[in-house]
Image (cartoon, rainbow, N blue to C red; front, side, top):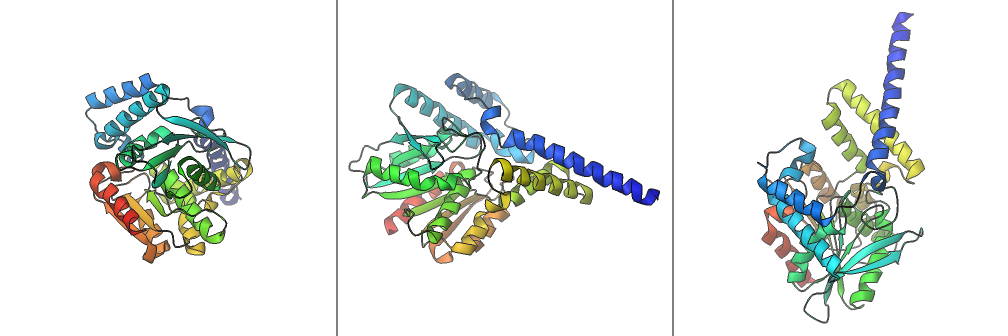
Length: 350
């Protein structure tokens, strides 16, 4: 009898632990606005100064990029300049309302060249905001391309409580493309460019363009270090924290599955829905030229996911650029000329 009771208690205990852990992690990770306050100019300046003085040692695999000076010093400097420009009114702030009634915030920058021939919608990563794309905005503006940097749902100054991890954000992207055309002219060519979670937003959107012909199509889509499947990504990250032995893997699976169920109730979708690779395989990408960037040393979103995305995409319309030694979000910072020249060369082809 004990041979039955003891394992049953053990399984019940593990299940209870997994559900409790899932609820706690979900409330911390997905209720972004509840747990994160806005960063001031002074705080960014302090972070920048601290990073410059630090030895720059790497810590855990999931936070390596946050301690990489090659990435974070220019990124924080661009953020600092961005916030100063917004405060000074030299960056134009706009607001739109999405289909569920949430007010979303975007930021417009005009190049010196007029009329505007090209414009790019920049989509940031998880827990970041439009200022997280400031370095890209600078790079595009230098090349005469207008920029619209957006705050995704539940990020920055946009409304919403729960992050959509790309899935719900993709539902807003057509509105931003329309706004781009309104701001810069209907004849301008549109680029959509996302980083990390924003990159998943881009991929999910172009797959929907293939499914729904009425959606406005961008001329180019750029995806920088996107995940291929949100469920698999969270499972991968959970295993890195909990461990990779059989029991630890089982606990990770229970936690992520429970989080997915909670998100279906609170956020409106199961994690499997935010899966750009399967979306591209299922619908295609509507012949939209796609550039995939990914660093080979990315430990937040593994390089293998980029390879899966490339295998899922339309090879005739997709370019895959792997950046040696670059960690998460590091492709631009490790190879800035390669990065921007690839995009500009693709623009010349359209």
